[in-house]
Image (tube, rainbow, N blue to C red):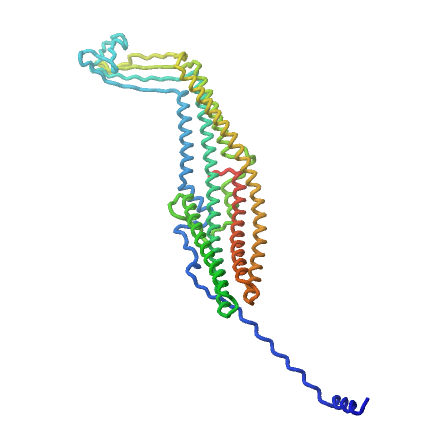
Length: 468
């Protein structure tokens, strides 16, 4: 080693330690841009003039105002009246008549009301020194009793089956009203939720528009970006307006279901989750599908039509009845006397009615055929409806799962797109597309959840019996 190199090495070893270069302080994190939006359309939808807070309250209003329920109850009352009319042909019938008659040409001759002379009644004699008065007052009481009338008995059976069918129809109306009320309640709650989601979507669109405008002012965005996000804001406004109209229509449908002429809403405390449990308190599940009220009503109508046709056929048979008549008249002296009292057995044999009975049999045969076909059609419809309602629950559950996953991905995509756009690595087109996808995913999930509730209600009420 040379002397010069040794001197240089000694100088370096003897020199004081060099100070380390200063470490620069960490830069403060950039503040996140917070947009301040204030738009009149972000205000909540105005509440309905009338609101229901529970299933029991809504069902009580339905019971008191439903025209369909009143019509079905009137049908039961009408069927009961028809049965009583049919039964009257087999029960004793008593009729009393009274009259006063005067012969204008022969005022001194007593005459019976109806035009016959007194002699036509009991031979012109009164007996006991009593003479008929002029004008003559008469009174009669007639009793008739059917002893053998097959047609009347079958008429009673037909009317009884029709009454059973009317009662089953009433239960079916109650089931359908319950199902319809549940559907409009779910639809109203869904419309309320959709209106809220549309407002959230509009706020998010306004946030993106403010962010894009800020980026444009800083030179990181173009005029095209600003116009594009403003277009997305108008799309969100359109969805909000359409959603509010759907909400008003849902409220009107609920009002019509509850028997009012104005829209009816639901309170914020309305519990949709317990709606299925609430309906179980009103309706009970069926042991077999054949016990559903509409099928019971169809079978009863078929039985009524069959017995009605048998009633018409039995019209060819003779009838046997008992008849008794008591006749009295005014006399002088005294108030009056019982002139006659007879009893007779009456056998009636139909011979020829001009084809009336044959036409009646053919008509009721056609009614029976129609009732049989209506029963078969109802049986097929109920079978398909039951299978479809059971499958609907599984489909709705699967759709909720897929909608939940889609919303999570849409939300994640929107967050990443907003961050990328904020640092200048994303385009406004991606920002608009991610925002629109997020709004659709939120709305789709909400609707799928309500569809699941509705599917469970339909599955239960399709195979249930409701008796209020």
